[in-house]
Length: 200
Image 1: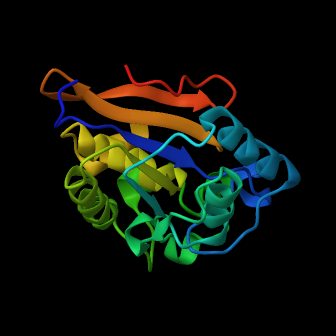
Image 2 (image 1 turned 60 degrees about the vertical axis):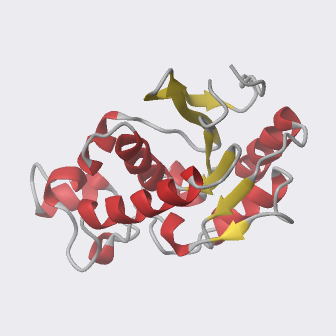
């Protein structure tokens, strides 16, 4: 990894009651569960204060709490570009609930009424990537499942909709970086207990 090629670390927020139930959680401020808080603390223990040149966080409470419990609340900058996909009328619903009314419905293909398109979420993700790329060091992002999946797809030069191929669990840790001059996924969807905090 050259001096110009830094890493972007992605931290999905800890579990909430809605994420545990498979409900689409966009802009609703659902708090972390006890298990979610424990996993967020585990991220902090594993990172042990690892320094980042920039820490960005979604302003939604579940991401802010995860960031704080991981030990980066005092240095994090909030940015609306890291908010989760706005699910519009489908906020709080499960895929199975939606498919009762719209058989075969897919979030990635069919979108949501009254919310964002996948392309609009992709535009926000690209702005975050541009901001991270302008920093002289590794960057940490505390955010949400679909947003981070889309951001990773955009990092790789894929379409935002290709984020559908990248499953991401709660309180997971992923790392985007480079192999020579090619953007790659260095680590993906790792449990906070298993991550290696060292650079490659």
